[in-house]
Image (cartoon, rainbow, N blue to C red; front, side, top):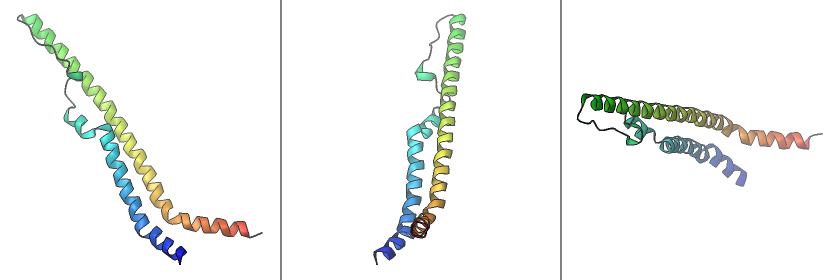
Length: 120
């Protein structure tokens, strides 16, 4: 009776929990890397480092160049973090796919291992 309940759970609610955990891991990965915030601030200056223009044209040009460099550095850092997030998403998805494929096979593999161990 206990074995039958186990198989009902394993191939029913247990498999549904595998899918739910996969969704949770993907959401947590997105939150870990703050993907939505990175996309929203993609062109923002790095660490809010900005220069304010002075009175002369030379100071205006210098501030414009400084601000452009700060935005470029911010863009590059955020792009690299987004690339790392994408690679992590792919890794999590691959692990989840392997888990979903292996989930229904685990009880069969355990039973086959026990039977093989008992036979001479």
